[in-house]
Length: 276
Image 1 (spheres, helix red, strand yellow):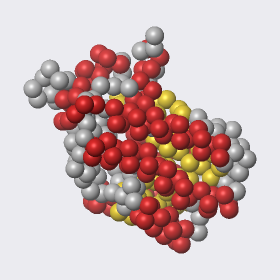
Image 2 (tube, one colour):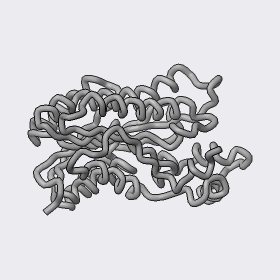
Image 3 (tube, one colour):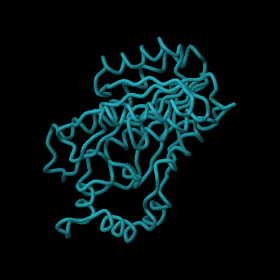
Image 4 (tube, helix red, strand yellow):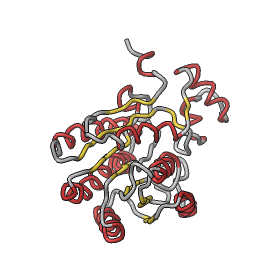
């Protein structure tokens, strides 16, 4: 018996990384899973995004846990596609109890070299996409009188960093969105919270573009160079996606809805060490 038996969860950005980890954590507690992922590249993103094969692999892993699973190739920037995912999930499962709004991208550029397209793609994916999928699931959660929404922010939202202003702005926006949405749904049985991880061992972080961002003085920095630089800057730094999923489940399994409008920092105390 799991704590989420009889419930259904929607995970965006579910093809790999944190999304896959969240889907499996929710499934192990008994939830049926709907996965949504763009499963295609975006021109302004300097690393390969998840593929349809990644999405199919996550389906297989969820099925191996013994739960029903749906998968959708969908772009969270599109209202039409978001609504299709939610309506199809409701038609199949009859409910959406948990939303892990996790789809996100990053681009690397100084502010003066950030193009309109880079800014728009980042904000529309990381912030507007979370708004759109949250808006779509809320009426169903309100009718049920229960729901758990957990959005993915980032430690960079709080600290900022050179060459990722669009990403930092989008993730800071997630924190503000969560706080406001939590007040909108207060007393309805729905909670809305956010996760703010730092350097998670996923393809968004482990790629040559990120290695170069952290090691601009090296011609062809490797993963080992990147890890050493992060340790020098922040201490331990890296952790697997499963650590973020543990935090997700902390909010999801909050039976009484005590945790509302919070953002959980997951980052080895990095912000504390860098505080002044």
